[in-house]
Length: 347
Ligand code: F6R
Image (tube, rainbow, N blue to C red; front, top):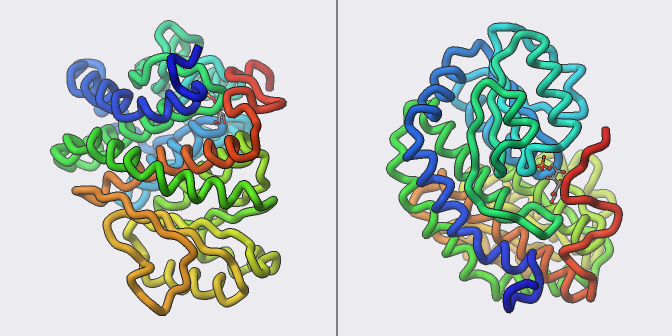
């Protein structure tokens, strides 16, 4: 049963703050294994970050954070690992909620055979991927029944913020507000309902972002595709004018992820889209782009964060809830998307 909730997906989104709290508690408590992991990553020549689907998006966020700070970090889609060769000097972080995804397991074995050091971040104990790794780290989201990754993704993001901040020598004090950030996001559910219900009427959408907004856009588009069967594409916002904009006409929905970076450029992209009649939706932190009266914004929701590094945590439950409410509006079961399995054990 869903224990009084409408569905497991709904329940699991609403548990995200607890999942994040438990994940960060365990990261801070298990100092021995965590410092081993940080040491190993910091000694590596390059850090490969491997995952599939939603776990890849969490990994991309992590890799971008490291890259921006000057570390060499390579995001790898698990099934495409053949074209990214690792050596003994490299470390590979494999991210998988289930710990059983065949593509990720095979990538992990492949990199192990190359002599690279393997680390894993999974949400279950004793799974195949953690068994294949030298250092096994865990998120503590608790069991996730809905096929779509929700609270496990948000927990991966929290764990990866913790690891990346440690690697970059940042103070992790700001993560004390991680749970509150997720709670703030959950308090914006009324907006998610309104936006999801609007997207429900559409057959296509774009999700656009810049910087760390790109992995969040990818995740938003994936979720609404798989749960609500709405065709959605994600692009770096700057790329949208190099082709995708051709499809935009009156009423075409474009969801902008505004994490507070490159705000001027993002505002230009909003103008370009609304000039073609797009229905623009903005998911923001702290600032509201729609305060700028030159921008035509259909709806904007802003989640407050005490530190901009928390922005991905503010976005995660919101994009999931938008997909959830779009599915609800369509009358489809969000827990059982067609053609998908919770654990994908084929290549
Ligand atoms: C999306 C989703 C999938 C998984 C992917 C990897 O909601 O659930 O994209 O993220 O199949 O699964 P794990 O994390 O178990 O390796």
